[in-house]
Figure 1 (cartoon, helix red, strand yellow):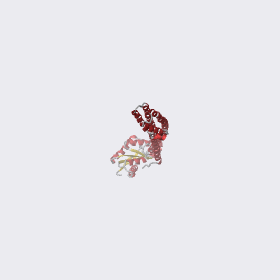
Figure 2 (cartoon, one colour; figure 1 turned 45 degrees about the vertical axis):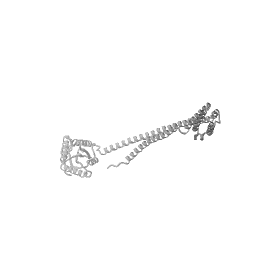
Figure 3 (cartoon, helix red, strand yellow; figure 1 turned 180 degrees about the horizontal axis):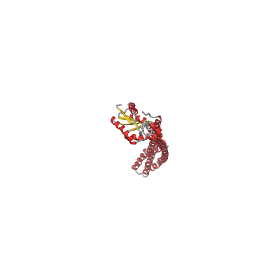
Figure 4 (cartoon, helix red, strand yellow; figure 1 turned 90 degrees about the vertical axis):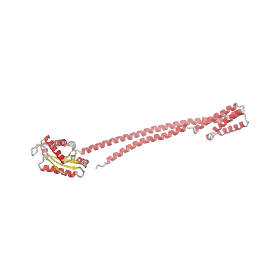
Length: 372
C-alpha cells in the first residue's frame, strides 16, 4: 500500500494556492467592473434625469415664457377678454415659478411672486393700466432670467464634474483592471509552472519506481515486481516457474563475469520467447529467474516447462566448465496456485522445493509441485 508523501501533499497545496490566487484575481476584476458599472449607471441616470437643479432651470424657462406672453398680451390688450388672457398666462407662470428650490436659493423669487400676485389682483379690479402692468413684469422676467443663467452655470458644472468623475473612474477601472489582470496572469503562469514541475516530478517518480521494480542487467522485473504482480492477479489461477542456471559459478570462473552477464541477458530473452507474451519475467538475484503466467492446469504448466527446455536446447549455449560436458542447462521448478497476497509465500516455497529436487536429482530438468 502506497502512502502519499509530504512532498506530494506540499506540491498539491502549492498548485491549489497558485490556482486559487489566479481565480481570486479574475473574480476581483469582475467585482471591480461590476462596482464601477454600478457607479456609472446611477451617475448617468442622475445627469440625464428631469429632477433637481436641471429641472428647476427648465421650470424657470417655461415660467419666463408665460410672463413674457402675458407682457405681450397686456401691451395690446384693449378689452377685458384680452386682459383675462394675460391674467391666465400670469397664473401659469406663477405656478411654475412657485417651487421650493427657487424660494430656497434665490432671494428674488418671493418678491417676484408677490408682484405677480399683486398685478393679477389689480388687473382683476381694473386698478392698473395694462401697459404699466406689462412694464412691471420686467422684474419677475429679470429674476427668472437670472435663475436660468445660474441653472445653466450649474449644468455646466455638473457636466464638468460628471466628465471629471467619469474620467477618473475610467482611469481607476483601466489601471486596476490591468493590474488585477496582470496579477491573475502571473498567478496563472506560476500555477502552470508549478503544475509542469509537479507533472515532471511525478513522471520522474514513476520512472524511478519503474526502475526500482526492474533488474538493471536484464531489464526484466525484480522480486518486488513479482510480489506486486501476484497481488494484481489476485483470485486468478497462475503458474510460478523458478529457473536456475546449472553450474553458473563455474561458467563465470571459466569465461569471466562479462560473459556471465551476457548469458543472464540471453536467458531473459530465451524465457520470453519460450513462455510467450503473457508471461512476466523476473530476476530474483544471481542466476535465479522466475516467471509468472496465467495457467489453468498443471498440464499446461508442464508444457511451459517443457517448452523452456526445448528452447534452451535449440539455443545451444556452450558451457566450457560444465562437469558433464554439456552446454548451458537449467534446473526448473514450478507450481500452480490461486494468486493471493497470503498464498504467494507458500507457492514460492513449493516451487523452490521442486527446483531443489531437480538439483538433487542431477540438475538439467524440471519438476512441478502439484496442488500446492
